[in-house]
Length: 165
View 1 (cartoon, rainbow, N blue to C red):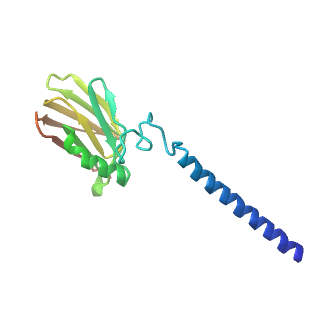
View 2: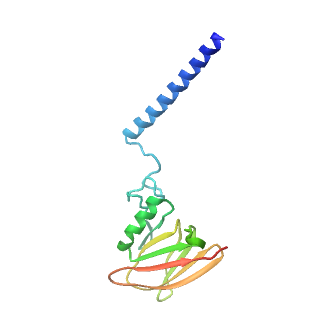
View 3: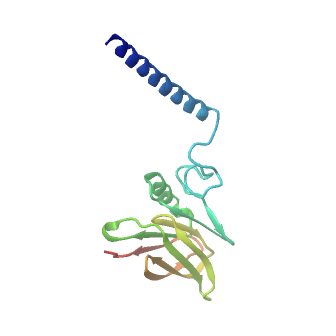
């Protein structure tokens, strides 16, 4: 009996010591400046150079865009940044559910491709020159097309809704 109690105490002490060392090691790694949760070169929001929950800005030619908004930090950051981007888009489904993996193709007034990308979440912000554009958005096998005019000053918005039930 006494031997079993001693063994249990030894095991409990060993577990406590291991947990303490693990927590201390994690705290040391954070203080030492090591990245936790991504790098500045990935295209997710964790560890990016934008900060404040903003997803990584992407570039296709001379067009910049950012997409995401799955988590609260990201969606808040994207909504707050809308006023600095000429075009903002939102993708929702039944019950205002947010959608991701929406394939977006933007063409200019001369039917020239400006951007082809896949949205990583319900929000996509795009830096475009002022002008008239057509946005083709595809979610699963359902396509939608909207015309947008990006003003010289201000912003344009386009909301896409799919009833996919």
